[in-house]
Image (cartoon, rainbow, N blue to C red):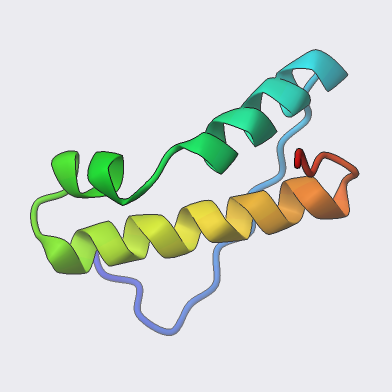
Length: 66
């Protein structure tokens, strides 16, 4: 499934408690979990970048736990 060069827009509506819980989760998850669930390092780096984008989207929506 290759879509190099294309951007994907994902729209998600969550109740505030779920948004907060998701923000906490993506704050706590890290390389170990990415690598453990990836086929190789390259995929783990892509997962890490996607999680960082999710963290930014949550922060932009007002959910940025310390």
